[in-house]
Image (cartoon, rainbow, N blue to C red; front, side, top):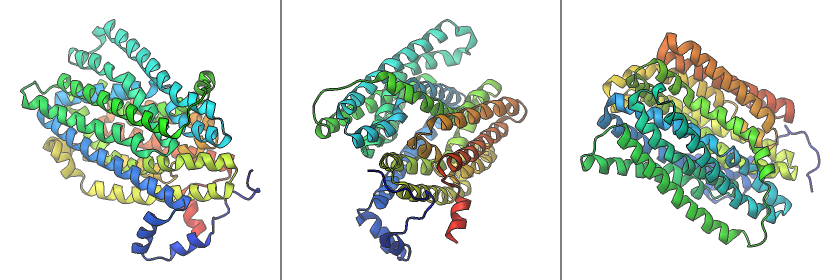
Length: 468
C-alpha cells in the first residue's frame, strides 16, 4: 500500500536520525557498523563500494605506471586508445540492460513476479553474450575491410582487443544484476579488483619471460584478465541465484526489457562519451605520447568520481524500492543524503589528489607532469557534477529515464562538439575544458529535471540553505 501523500521535500525527522547528529565522531562511526536501519545499511553499502573502487583504482594505477614505464609513452598511448575502444563497444553492446536491472529486479520482487524475475536473471546474460558477439564481429569486419584508415601500429592490438567485448558485456550485466540484488561483492570485486590484478600479474609474467613490452602484449594481458573476471563472476552469480531464487517457471520479456533499457543505453552511452571521447579525439590530433600523458592525468583526477559511483550504486536499489512503495518521505531523505554523501567526500578527494598530482604523474614519467593543468580543469567539472549527487541514478529509479536520456544526449553532443572545436587549437587543455564543461551542463540539466518532475531539489546549495 502506498504511503499517504506528503510533500516530497518534507525532512525526515526520526528520533534515531536526530540523535545521531549530535553524537561524537567515534560513536557515529560505531553506529554506522551496528545500526540496522535502512539509512545505515545504505551508508555501509556506499562505503563498501567506495573502498572496492578505491582498491581497484590503486591496482589499476600501479598497472598503468608499470605499463607506461615498461612500454614507453608511444606504445602506452596505443594501448590506451585500443582499451578505450573496448570500453566503449563493450559498454554499449549489452543495450543498456545492465543498467535497467537495478530498476527491473526490485520492481519484480516488490510485485511478486517471480516467473519474470527468474527469466530476467537468466535471459539478460545470454542477451549480453549474443549482442556482445555481434558487436565484436561487426568491429572486426569494419577494421578488416578498412585497414588503410588505421595506422599500422594500431591494427593488431585493435583486432585482439575485440575479443574482450562479449565478456566485457557479460560482466557489465552481472554487475547490474548484483547491485540490484544488493550482492555488492559479487557485482564489483571480479571486474574492479580481480580483473586489474590479473592484468598486472599477466603483464609482469610477460615481462619476466622476455616478451616484447608493446601494445600487443598488453592487450593479450587484458584479454586474459577480462575472461578470468567474467568466468569467476558468472560462477559466483549463479551460485547465489540458485540459493536465493526458488526454482520455477520462467517468463522471458526480451522486447519489454530491451524497450525499457534503450533510454538507459543512451544514458550509458553519454557516460561513456564523457569518460572516453576526449581520448579518441586527442588521438586523431596528437601523437601517442601526449595521448598517454592526458590519459594518466585524466584517470588520476577521475578517482574523485568513485565517490559518485559508490553512492549511486549503493542507493539505486533503495531509490527504486521506495518509489515502488510510494514512500515519498523516505525517498526525499535518501536523495538529500545521497547529495551530501557525494559532494563532501568528492571535495576532499579532489583537494588531496590535486595536492599530490605532480608526484603521481611523475610515477608514470617525469614528462607526464606537463599534464598537471589537465587535472585542475577536470576537477572543476567533477565537483559541479558531485554537487547534485548521483542524479541520474535517482531519475532512472523514479521512471524518468527518457528525460535522463535526453539530458545525456545534450551532454554527449556538447562534449563531442567542444572536443572537436577545442582540441585542434588547445590540445590537452582543450579536451579537459570540453569535458569539464559537458559535465557541468549535464549536472545542471539533471538538477532541473529532478526539480520539475519530482519536486526534489537535489543541489548541495539548496540542501545547505535548508539546514540553516
